[in-house]
Image (cartoon, rainbow over all chains, first blue to last red; front, side, top):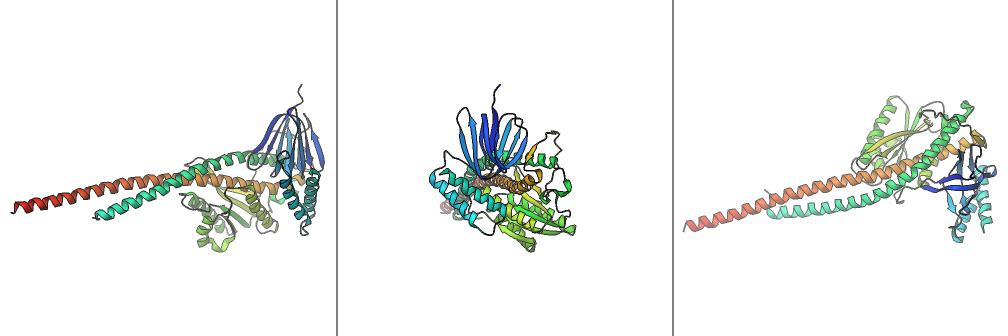
Amino acid sequence: MSEEFKVEIVNPEKSFLVKDDVSEVVVPAFEGEMGILKDHISIISFLKPGIIKILSKSGDENYYVEDGIVEFKNNNLSILTSTIFNLADMDKSKQQDLLKQAEEEANKTDINDQSKYLADQKVEVLKTLN
Amino acid sequence: MASLDDLKKRIASVKSTQKITKAMKMVAAAKLRRAQESAEKGRPYSEKMNNVILNLSNGISDKENAPKLLSGTGQEKTHLCVVMTSDRGLCGGFNSNIIKKAKSYFAKILDEGKELKIITVGSKGNDQLKRVYGDKIIENISFKESKNANYFDADKVGKMVIEKFEAGEFDVCTIFYNQFKNVITQIPQAQQIIPLNNEEEENSSEESYEFEPDEDEILSNLLPKNISTQIFKAMLENSASEQGSRMSAMDNATRNAGEMVDKLTIEYNRSRQAAITKELIEIISGAESL
């Protein structure tokens, strides 16, 4: 029996990625990283800034996301996100830009705790990429 | 009857108008393809979003304490209308159709004695509405600089709407836009986004989900995003509709100009012939009298 399932990543502009030979996906869920294998229970959760790891036979892929929702149902994993970058395409300058933005956001004083937390997360994740 | 010279000038001017409308049609056609593509590509996101929210709201246990964005404030005194139009003219009935739809809705609301607030997106709508409803318009946004509809802009509008909702400035929010059906048909739409209208039949899939964190928290995170998504969808549909509408309007204009050129050319030839005949008669009758 195959241990593969389908993953679909959509952003507002288009369907970003569709893959149906995925063996495992690790998503940065709000309450900690979550690994999803085939026949996982149906789940809805949302994401914090972090790295999505997609493991499949054809090779592993890593994506940086800032927010989103994951829905897993009948071995279909849908990820809805507004900001997503393939780490393979992301060069140093792009990374620096994002980091700068995130730092600016984190240093604002007039934001609430949750956005502050999210901005800190962004900074942290982007720093580890270097 | 106009002189030959006048006719010639008019023919030339109609011809150059025709050239302009033809060029505009071509541009609109090219843009339409792109806009249509991105409207179609954008659909999965909003559909999936809707699905998730539907599942969530079905699964929510405590309906009374549901987030206000979902269940409303419990009254409907103040209505906010977001009217989305284009920034450019010369696109047939595109803008007037939205405005017409919006105006009839406004009239209904005011008749019922409710309060009305308007946000216009796009300068053409603002131009048309400010004459009658100028005092009701609280905000006017225009994205002249951005070439294509993008999520960033939609998010800005969405955040503004949510901010105003949280400040208690309105109870019900409706957006007006043109839904793109095909190049010839665009349907003006009024869509209520706050509180969320769950008119769709309850889908029977009683699939139980696991939620992490709990439903309420996901919902309160998701609903604001959904607002932006719906606005973005409206913007995409609108930009496809705008180009489609402009294309058919310019096509008509080009055809009308062609007809006019034909008519003027016939008139020109007739009067040229008449002038020649007149001259001939004059010469012949002059020769005969000798």
